[in-house]
Length: 307
Image (tube, rainbow, N blue to C red):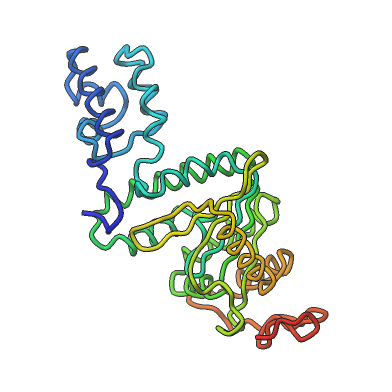
């Protein structure tokens, strides 16, 4: 079973249709699962998983299977519809909108946003958040997220602006392998210019933190109005109402104002990366930046954002 709001892989209509077609074509070719698996350099049991809609096949597997079974492109025609398999059904409209956007502004108070996650981080958080899911079901979710992330980052669009709470980074100190890999990925994305990343310091008090109500994503387009996606436990909502979008956009702007600028965020990530000793974080005493204190006092009164 999977967590509330997530469909079991075998309950996904696109996966079921692909599995039935794979089994039909294999039968026409008079091939057992083991024989087809051997031809494709995979196990026969994996073929069975695909046919029972228990696993999501990769594009590479689909291409090889289509050729081996002389399917004439039939399996390849079905594969694009599998792209959302492994994601909650309620997120479908949002997932379809993301590649069409020119800018994606993402804020999450408790997690690294999906487009910035390492595979290890995604696995850990998805497993923790899907208490009833099997390891195989978690693997499907992780694979889907990583594939979507790869497509998004390789395309170069939308531009990504992500804001993360500092405590999200600090929470990783008990998992050094995950922490180091995640820090390296955030630094790579920041320094390559693929994503602008800001961190909200933990010193910002609840009275001055505008983002405590939950995660939000704003999508901007060149040919249509902005939309906002908000997600809760087992639910998600793509909002197009202009007044609501304007209000949430204002909230995002206030979160930006409370966060370190991108260049100072990079310095913070580098310092955490450098001072991590493999078992925990040494005390990080950040240098004083002109006009503000990065630790202990938040932003000073010169720009109106105290801690």
